[in-house]
Picture 1 (tube, rainbow, N blue to C red):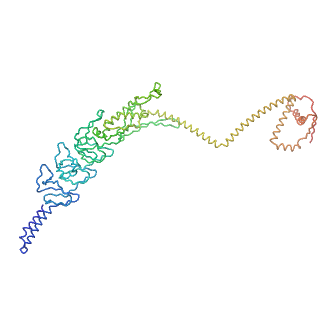
Picture 2 (picture 1 turned 90 degrees about the vertical axis):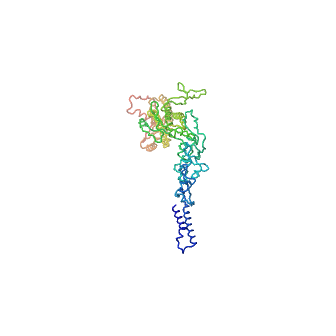
Picture 3 (picture 1 turned 135 degrees about the vertical axis):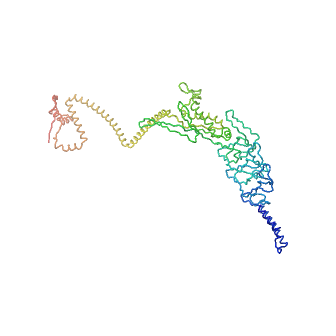
Length: 629
């Protein structure tokens, strides 16, 4: 303003006041017109110098009118018709010309565009505009035909924009926002992760556009009735999309930009959840040891089992046969995307469903099944514990309920798991949760209940091991024997041949003995006949002669060289005896001649036993003997 006044004053002085003070010698019509033209130029330059503004790149200019616009009325804050005060119009980057711009307006060219970073959302609040309707908390969304064109203050105010918090938000980007109209708060955008759905609780009743979830403003916002109410299902006030309350449909995984004051999103994990109930007890064991003598000794050991921070809760204690037995349980649960809104409206988060509803039910049902009775399928038996057969000869199968025993946690685990799962499923369905399976962990059965069975098993295994070891030893002995036999095969063959030879020799000896027996029998018979013919003495003498001859014959067979030497030198030591025959004795006379004398000398030799009978006298043949040297 001062610049314009200065230039105008200088122009007026130059055009109208300065000429009279010019010396006469310099005056002339040309000079007067020249001064007036210069004054006019100064005035025009002064007006032009206040009628433009230069806005830099990435910036914009806001205007505040000072003169000539009149006052704002009706509670308006931003002028759209040239009133004095904050102006809706802004100047975009570049050289902007407007008559007396810098005189009539306070021009601020330092404003920069508002930037919304990635992953953030700009929440808008309008300082001016139409008033909200009664009961309305947020302004209506921008008209679809205008879109972000409503960010221009003049467009916003001329098209029914409402003051207050806006449902329309700014997505990541840069925006030239008039500070006189808009206030921007930067918030985090909502990113629904994979495996989750976003359940929307709305505070407004309006059109909805969440990209994957769109709906016009519904005419009826009555609560959707619960179809499973008769089955004990929890009450869950769910409304159509666009109404105030928890919407029936949920947001799929993705990034969403909305006013967090108008909508709140609860993420529900639709993946399978593993709820583990474990720890918080002492696990005891009895170890059995076997010494070298086969004696069994036992040792008891107890160790605490801590509760993991990720567990749903500690182990479930049940009373079975007078024992407190901790059961570890693993439950697989899942919430379908269709049931996510029911969970939020009926209970809250999935953790709240677990803690408030399902964990107490799981504990109670597990105690009822493990500490009570359950159904088993087994053959029907008679009084003698034998299966009862039907007409086709097959066992009759029946279902019975019987008390649960501690060892059933090992022997009948699938049946107990199935019974717990069967009872838990309807309870979970009341809370809009589906139970996929129930699995029991390793039961901490008191070792005193198992030690007898284990000792019996160990003793049985030791007996089997002893049998196996004995068989192995026998096999090893057999193998070593076979190996030794193979190594001594030559000796064994020779021994076998020797055995066979000895058998044959025994047979031969037996045969020889039989022959000898027969021979001796015949000899005895002959000797008996001889005795009758020759008499006892002659028979004895003859027998001695035969034995002597046999002995000499055997000796000659075994020692031919001795006999040969004796015969060679016989002439030197033995007298020559000539034997001749007389009469008709033949061979008998020769034998008598050769050996008769020896026999007679032996019979009459001194030292003969007294009383030896003298042979009866009788005729003897004459045997001439001639002795020669």
